[in-house]
Length: 160
Image (cartoon, rainbow, N blue to C red; front, side):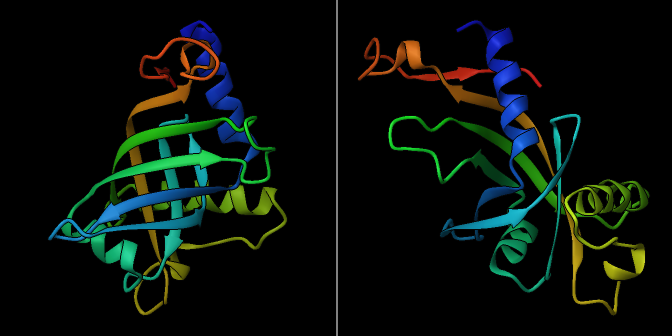
């Protein structure tokens, strides 16, 4: 599979799924994985809302480096494909907050959910808006898989 084909596959996976799993770690390195509903921008920015008291939110405040995976958990065994990402995440509090909530809200409305506003993600509201910015992306390359092909690492880097 070419990197161009892999990039197209990665974009299709991001476009066709609504949940991603964020793997974060606290200050001591204890891992935690959380599924969250997301909206993406340009396949590099991923937005979600969460309580700042949620474990993953506290972890991100202490250690912003995260890993993300987007996949279809209903795929038959042996037929799954996923996008794996390294990213830096943070609660949005700066000038990009308005842009971020617009992207998140548009994704929600497109999927039949309610519109979100700045008032929904600023104190004293329960939720905050978070963004993960992906720096690296991979998919599994079926041509380089121990069962389907060679015995090498079967991750294939892809561009957004």
